[in-house]
Image (cartoon, each protein chain N blue to C red):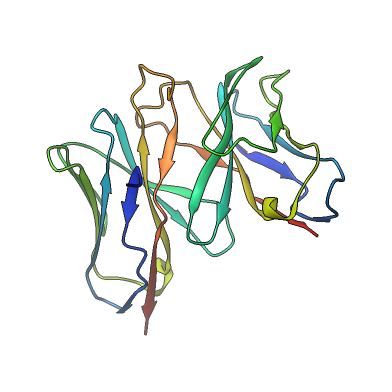
Length: 114
Length: 115
């Protein structure tokens, strides 16, 4: 089983749609969780961190369910500019040899069309 | 401007010819790492460094070497490149070895082709 798994998509949605991505992780000792965005052939950039209480940044909402070991990202009112690959990222436990290591999911491709 | 700089951006080389991809960050970050990205496999960590002179293997270290003689630089060395090392490479840095909610900054990537 992969450490971090995502549905690779692609998701094709019209402008204005709401779309949700899910991600599961296998290491129950994982400490930190993030969503990164990657545009075609460019470097990943942090979209948002994911907190246990859930957090929102404008049209983006991230949720974490530690019991089920999954993370979600909800995008409301999709824009053309949201088209990208969304990477689920998990930080392994800080106490062992994987100190500070980020593990990436494969990424979910989103295309927003007019 | 805070940034991670990789060079070169594009490189085509032949099997067996040693090469170095440089990575430099200007944010005084302790933690640096190298990833390769391949279709269907996502980003996989090659090596990481928690501080000067401290490096360790990631998930796919075979065929690669690194060094961390200075805090800002973390070069990736391919002593004898092979075609299966054709990939998109990213260098990343973050503040501290416990990056709880700490952002990782990535370089722009190096697209390497080994023929």
